[in-house]
Every structure is written in C-alpha cells, then in structure tokens.
Amino acid sequence: MGKRRRVEETRASKRRPAVVGGMAAVVLGGAAFGVYALYGGGAAAESGTAASSDSKPKIKTGPLTAAEVTSASTAFLTSWQRGEVARAAAATDDAKAATALLTSYAKDARISAVTLTPGPAVGAKVPFAVKGTVSFDHASKPLAYASALTVVRSTTTGEPEVDWHASVVHPDLADGDRLVTGESGTPPVKALDRDGQELTAKAYPSLASVLDGLREKYGKKAGGKAGVELRVVRGAASKKLDLSDKTVLEMSKGTPGEVKTTISPSMQAAAEKQVAAKARASVVVMKASTGEILAVANNGKGFNVGFLGSLAPGSTMKVITSSLLIEKGLASADKEHPCPKYFTYGGWKFQNDDEFEIKKGTFKASFARSCNTAFISQAPELDNDSLTKQAQQVFGLSMDNWSVGVPTFDGSVPVQKAAQMGASLIGQGGVRMNPLNMASVSATVKSGTFHQPYLVAPSFDGRRLATASRTMSASTLGQLRELMKYTAQYGTAAEAMSGMSGDFGAKTGSAEVDSQEKANGWFTAYAGDLAAAGVVQAGGHGGDTAGPIVAALLKMG
Image (cartoon, rainbow, N blue to C red):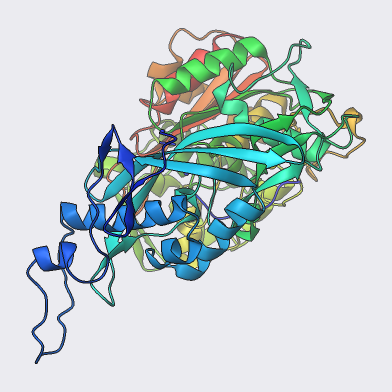
C-alpha cells in the first residue's frame, strides 16, 4: 500500500590497541595514532586557550584543529573498541543515544572482539574500518565493514566531540534504527524477473531496496523458511519513509520462497546503464496498457527515488493541468491562448523562463514551449480543489491506495488556494511526484485509462489494484495526445525524442528547489506501449538531462 510522505536522498588490524598514558591508541598502518587527553592538556593546552586561575574559563570557538579531531575521534574509537560504552558515549554530543546503540551493538547484534582502525582524517571527518565477530548459539562469523565519524565543537563546552548519528556505528543505520542478530522472522525470497530468472542486487544495484521490500511483504507468503542473520531493524523514523529491514550478514541460510515480478531484464539493465551516466538520476519504465513495471533505476545512495521520491514535478504536471483546462473549456489545442511574459495571481508575480511571451499563439504552442503563464492565467477560473480532483479521478494519484507489491509514494496534489494553487498548476507549490507517478501519467494518456502500476501481479496474493473513478472524454484525450505529440516533435522534448516514429508524445519539466542552484530536470513520455519518466536532481532543463535517459529506453520498445 502506498503511503504519503515528504521527502525529497564509505561505508581494518585485529591487534588490541597499545596503551599510551592510560588510554588506548588505535593502530593505523602499523603506527600508533597520537592520543590527546579529552580534558586538560593535549589539544586544549596546544590551542593556548587554558583559562587562568582567577578568571572564568573561556569557551573555545572557531575551526577545529587537526589535533582536536584526532583527540575526539581517538577517545571515542578506543573506548568503543575496549567495550567502555559510557566513556565512548561521553565523547559524543548525544551520550544517551550513543549509550543505547553501543549497548545494543554488543547485546542485540551480538558483535564482539571489535577492532577499529582509523584512516587519515579529511578535515573533521574520520573514516574507520570495523572488524568483529558475530555469534549466535554455537555459530559465529567474521564481520567487516567501513564507517566514518565527524568531529564537531561543542557549543556548550567548546571541546571537540563526535557528532552522533546511528550511521557512525554502521553506515546502513538511520537514527532510531538498530542492529539485531537472530532468527530473521521473515523468510528470504528469490525474486524472479518476468522471464523466470533470479534478480539480484549484484546484477541490478538499483533493485537492492526493491528486493528488501519484496521480502518484507512476501517472505511469509511465498513459502520460505527463515534463517539466522544480522540485520538492520528499522525505527519509527525509517518506517515513516517506508524503508525496509535489511540483511547485513547471513549466519545460516533460510529457504527462500519465490516471487515473480514484472521486471524486464533487458530493460532493467539498460535503465541501470542510463542512470549511471548522470548523478542523482532516476527513471521508471512501465507497460502502458497493463501497468506492469518493467524497470526502475536510481543513481543515488540507496534511497529509491523512482518509487519513493517526493519531488515537485515542474512542468510535467502540465499534462494533468491541460486535461483539466480542456475539460472545462478553458483551453483547446488549436485555439488562441494567452501566454504573456508575466501573470500575477494571489499576490505572486509569475513569469516564463527567460521572460518569453507568445503573442497570438495557440494553447498547443504554449504547451510545447512550456509557457507557465498560459496555465496560471486560468487559475481565477478554477476552484481550489479542481486540480486535486482531476489528479485523483482521472489519473489515480494522490489517494494513498496503490498496491504495487513494494512500498511506493503515490503522489500528492493537495487542495491549495491563491498563489499556491496557481503554482500547483505548473507542478510547484505543494505538488509532489516521483518517476513512477509521472510514468503512470503518460501511460494514462497513451492508454486512455488509468492502470495502477504494479511490480507483482495481483493474482499472486489476491490484492486489489487501485482504480480511477472516471476517464477523459474522447475529445479531451485526443487533444492531450496531440499536445504531447507536438511537444515531442517540435517543442522542448524534440531533441531527446528525435528519431522516434509511430505513436509517441512527451513533456519536459524543470522544478525549482530552494537552496539548489540548478532546477530538477524532469521528462515524461510514451512510445508504442511503453511509458516512462525520469528526473535528474539539480540537473537543469529536463529535455537536456532526464530526456535522453527516458528516450533511450522508449526506443528499445
């Protein structure tokens, strides 16, 4: 079941440390890491800020010195390695949270004989390697991974301390998560592609979180048997983001059940290759006539933006807005439509990219060139909930009822008023989407009817897919297809879609994001029976960034 969220996305020596001045020195490259006292002397004395006996102690400020970074990181790592939880926690800026997780690390995760080996600091960040042993009943296995910590200056004492986050203990942990070793509770699953071959995270890195989601939902239904493993158990904050538990180390194998998916191995491989060429790129491809998801790929750090992203879709939202305006008689593809340089609504002054205008142009020309004012100028004629109803009733979005087979965010088109309502017409304001949502929008235009996207056939577990309450009229649908075809041939999507033949259409988008120099680039399109959408965060114009990714995959069909 989809859930609504707001989001928006490096990982070693077995010797015990030598004792230096009553503290342990962590071994690095065969040489002892210098140790500095946390309180008095050491880095504090070196910085020349020790207070005189007749004055109030001065709190140090300013950038950390290399000695301070070494002092705080060494104090934390040596104490953790020696099992001195209270002392290690005291070296952080959140002793309570650190104590809880470090205690759980030994008790619940059952990790012992820990050796921590720091690498060279990069500014205030200190990478380190972790080696240990995980034990359960009479079985044990070695564990090795990389992590990192960051040293900050305390705002109350001025002393250096470790900036505490759960990811310090293990990079797969978010705050509130913990590591647990035991019977998994959820049997493993073997996920199969549409041809019956196994899908693995090694072959398709973007599917790692998808495979975790499939196990969580279908592990007990697919007929498997649980094994023993060290796993990440998600806390409340992670669950709100629909993050699934994750296996870190398998102690004894369970017997997996099988779950067949709709993934196309050739399309998935191509999608992985396409997103790898651009930072923070995501794409989803689906079959328009059925809703079957053929591929989802992300070039990011673990988070599945394709399914779970919550981003302003920019001008790709104009596909939905156009259907609304045509239905209400406020626009027609070949009729003249206003596209002024500026339009003021709700106290906001809206403008077009580079402040262009189209004099005496058609609505089709405004759509193809992505004229913002052509859409916002119609806001006074709409009710506050008009766009929300259109998204829900025709395109099946923003109702939190998709049942894809793994967690998804199903889009959000909230009821807004005044300037925010105007902004939502062009995919800004409070509107939030992801590539799965926008691929579905193009699929609805292509097929004429909303088909809820799915990764696992509903016949596998008897679940019901979401439906839309109505379809567009033949006239509205025909004009909408005409708008997208014209944009793909002569508008902002033409370069990316060049060489395409047959039945196809597209829409580009750029979504401004606060504190981000470049806009997020969006592209949604269909060709034949394929529909796809992609986003490149902080990439710029969608036609130049996400467009080539989407078009390359559609041309495979």
